[in-house]
Image (cartoon, rainbow over all chains, first blue to last red; front, side, top):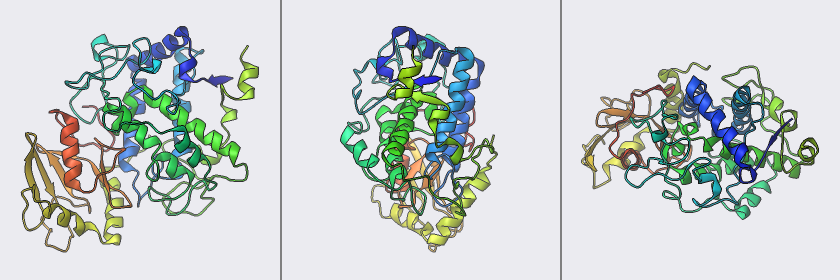
Length: 282
Length: 133
């Protein structure tokens, strides 16, 4: 059973196993396939046309499936690896151990935003940015530069309290839990974290920064927490809705998976905060 | 892998913008920005931080923008000749592939933000599937 742990609690060995597996996927080209897929959806998901990965109800199940596929690739390299999650309500400064040289490396240098330390620094030679929106082949970050503060626990709790999953018009203008979590409305949770990290994370090719996976693993966890708080609430829309994926509709690019298939994460993994995880860990 | 052509991706947005009747608003917003060199049709042509920003309003606007490069209902935004992928949100704000998770009030603000983010780098060739520059 895969157990997804808080990144702050990983041992040095676990951190090294994760970053080594990521570097191996980069070396084989698998990593860049994920970046390309993500950007394709970023550019084609529109508020008034077909939308699957973003600004739509399937934002959460789409990314759950996307992360599962990436995690499976990591586990082909090293079966001990699971996606860690980054609780940005708790680890909310550039001095967090997340950004240390033994994990993801830190913020970029002032001159050009280039990350200069850690396993993903361009100068380390193993993590070129190949799928990109501009000419720069180096990983960039500007932690806290474009927006000063990460979302707070109180802001997250207010969104988790929303009882309705999503509602018409099922896009970036919607009221409800999904769009407030995605961040087009309200306190701005998920979107703001992308902007806070800056560099590639602020662009359509955001998975170029390995923190993408930890950010979305936490967004995914918040979805699970919302489900636990609102057992009577379910994924919406149910059926017959134009341009978006209904509960039993299939999601591109896989075409064989529905939001309904993704509702229960416990089929695939547990979080380290759950009793099931405690039972399966030694 | 999904196969989305630019025409498909842009076409859906075009229909919706036309339906909402807001395609012409872009040109108006740009034209009222005193800092930009504008033409009566709403085209923007300015140098910002050393980069040339050109914005051609969407075709089909009601202020005579029929010669614009935007065949899709969206304006065409270019930085030093390279096209910047832009989208309009349901609330009328704008995002680009360079600043995807942060919204801007109009295409010119969006283009200037992209210039700042690029820090002199050249935009990659326009490619709806991301491309490998």
